[in-house]
Amino acid sequence: MSADTDTSRPAPEAAAPMDFIRAMVTKDVADGLNGGRVHTRFPPEPNGYLHIGHAKAICIDFGTAEQFGGRCNLRMDDTNPSKEEVEYVDSIQEDVKWLGFNWFADVRYASDYFDACYAYAEALILAGRAFVCDLTPEQMRSHRGTLTEPGQESPFRTRSIAENLDLFRRMRAGEFPDGARVLRAKIDMTSPNIHLRDPVIYRNLRSSHHRTGDTWCLYPMYDYAHPIEDAMEGITHSLCTLEFEIHRPLYDWVLDQLPEFFVEWQRKTSGLPAGTPYARPRQTEFARLNLTYTIMSKRKLLELVKRNLVTGWNDPRMPTLSGMRRRGYTPAAIRTFCDKIGVTKYNSLTDVALLEHCLRDDLNRVALRYMAVLDPLKVVIENYPEGQVEEMDAVNNPEDAAAGSRKVPFTRELYVERADFMEDPPKKFFRLAPGREVRLRWGYLITCTGVEKDAAGQVTALRCTYDPATRGGNTPDGRKVQGTLHWVSASHGLDAEVRLYDRLFKVEQPGAVDGLDLAAELNPESLTVITAKIEPALAAVSPATPLQFERVGYFRADPATQPGRPVFNRTVTLRDSWAKAGAKKG
Ligand code: ATP
Ligand code: MG
Image (cartoon, rainbow, N blue to C red; front, side, top):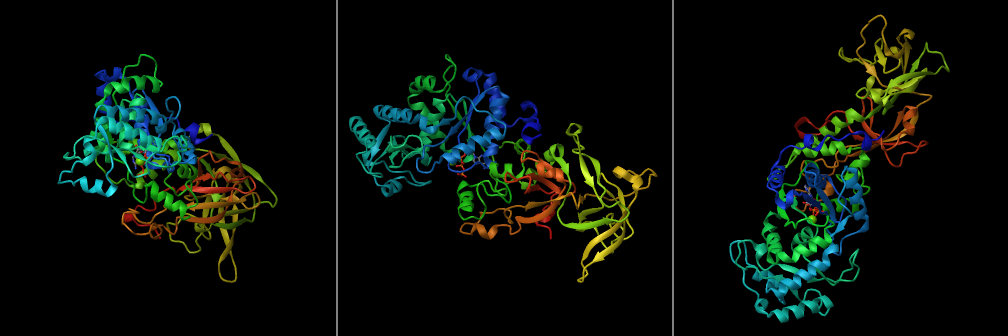
């Protein structure tokens, strides 16, 4: 049983609260806009692995389409040729699927539309709405003006259409070096919106593209290409994060210059059924996710990887979906979290404890319970026959009867947690102490009768007796025993490497201080590796199965685990140990 198949998804209507985007789409559908069709897209730039922030965007993009019976495209935004890598393209697809979403038709690439972008640029030139500019980058900056002062028109703005077309074609043919000339939209140098001050829409860039190779030596700018890509795919609702709000007038400008241009192209490139009416895409912005104790900038995540501050993009401490998957996060927990944080128009900082809460909540439902002792202390049951092994019945998940049961070997020598024994305990200590009786989970009741110590006074073993009438942990005489301990047979238990992960950063807002080295903000206790004793059944558990080590925490077998050499990652502790005043315990 795996988290991927077992955490059944609620119906989208049930899961999705009515945020402003869903309200808008509801109205559009009711109004019959675009024939009532809903078509969104998720457009990651393949220059890194997806992280929990992207999960929010994915849930909004795919979730909205799903809720309205629409479609959502997965589009690799590979307009920028130098940075993209195939490794990222593959991981993005894997992560979207893992979250439980399916995209419409084939994966799309911004580079699929380089021809359309180029053709539209020529059309804009012919319409007198774009020009080739020879200003140097510095001159262009000084002409641009400021937030309070208008810009100055480029002296090249008045070039004839014929000259512009000729120069632009020669830019394409590779006649000019990079940086010599650019194509600019002719909009308004006095606009209060700086993005409308004759923005650059094409520049020469000698850089091989991961898909188009050396076909192009000039590439479109993102702000110009993005609305065209949306139009090529028949997108109705282009949902993105707030930083693009100020770019929206340019998005609209691009689409509205020669609207007839897009109609035919959309029919050819969208993959939609014949006769689908033309859709003019519309952009709507929502706030990005910011999480405490977490960085989400791909540039900074890449820095962690490059400097070996983590073991890779899928290090279980990374906020990447691949890291979270390896750590033991379930897709259901992440989707529930995304529903809970909602969709708004203002930026805020979400407490990572909410994400962990959603995780614990889901894991409590689906995790299979096992016993593992992280800090073993030996127990010898003196009245238990030497060499005897009893197979005790243990329930796999008290929250899920269908999860069944398993056998756990009970023997004369066992391990319990060192912290479950105190030689001189306070009254309310309901665990082991001289003369006190506890229940061993699924086993017997035992009473501590003696303590063995080494020369330094360290407790090395406990001598105990058991009550044979209490098999399975029952008390036929009705006597009350408060404490129940987990345990592992000393002769049948196995050694396992257990990686105790904690938050990667020790400060609430890592990366917030400019110039401060990220390494200085890392939590030095983000990883502790120990050797634990595990019950034998755990050796065969696959990384697909969410686990709870009873009383200890939630765990997941690492992909590197092997029956002869089990390895487990701690997903999350049973309770929030950071809760008090944002400070780490101990
Ligand atoms: P970065 O700034 O780290 O490079 P990005 O926004 O450039 O991230 P993209 O690959 O372009 O990353 O993102 C794809 C989509 O995911 C975009 O629509 C973007 O708005 C959205 N997205 C990225 N980060 C977040 C976030 N923290 N919260 C919500 N959506 C996000
Ligand atoms: Mg981006």
